Structure formats: C-alpha cells, structure tokens
Image (cartoon, rainbow, N blue to C red; front, side, top):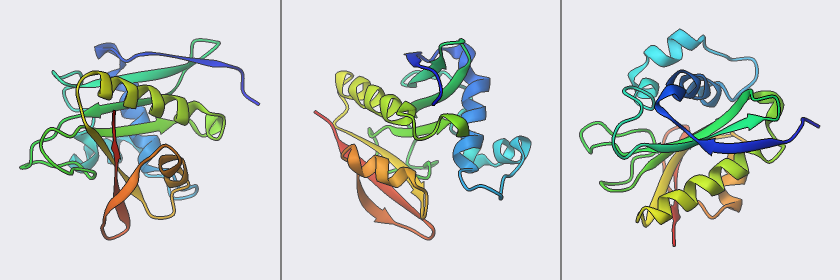
Length: 164
C-alpha cells in the first residue's frame, strides 16, 4: 500500500499539475490513453485548466509523504454559453478530479472529494456537479458520497450532490 498523503489548497502554481490530472481523468480506461498534448488541446478538456486560477476557482492537491503531488480535485464555474461536461446550471460549480493510477483505491479520491464538497458548501454553494463516463469505477465513489445521476447522455452521466 502506498505511503500516507496529505491535502493542501491548490494554488495558481498548480496549473500544470492540474493539467496532468485532467489527462488522468480523461484516460481512466487502461489501454486507450491519449497523449497529454492531445487531451489538453481539446477545448472540451482544456476548459478545466485554461486560465487557472480564475476568480471562483478552488481546489485541493493530494501530496504523498515524499512531497510528490498524486491527485487533485477542483471546481470551476462555467457559463451556459460554454458549459463543461457536467454543467447543470448557472451558479453550480463543476468539479474535476484526477488521481495518479498507483494511488487509486487508497482513499485519495474520496478525501479530495469530501474536502472539495466541504469547501464548496462553506462558500455558499448549494450543489456541485461532475461528469463521469459510463463504466468508470469512480461512479461508485461518487454515489457513495451522495452524488446522484441527473442527466444521462451518450456515454456519460452528469451527477449532482446537494450540499449543506
């Protein structure tokens, strides 16, 4: 089992690492990995880190005892005119989460998800959303943390959690 980890608030300097986590999230299936430059050049994925850290952006980074960044969860607000995959409405932040493969199933994602939801609640948000592709094991984690499917699209579902 990997060593222990801790969480810290994400900063503007974490933008490149968040990009790595977008790539991890996009490449959750083993065997079908798309290269980093291809994922981040896609506007549907690039929007999750472009211009990080904008007003309203917030997140947390998980670090191993060695100091290595191993995962992150953050949220952004998107306008109706440029929605993210998990957009449900104005004023509802959409979260993104990524964890390095060797650290999956060790509580990192759950800890990040809980901390980010607590933060969103403390900042007055009533709901938080995300998008998950069909077949992604992470959907089990999201359901166990109170997220429910609100929209089922082609190949992916939007999930929302009520906060507070």
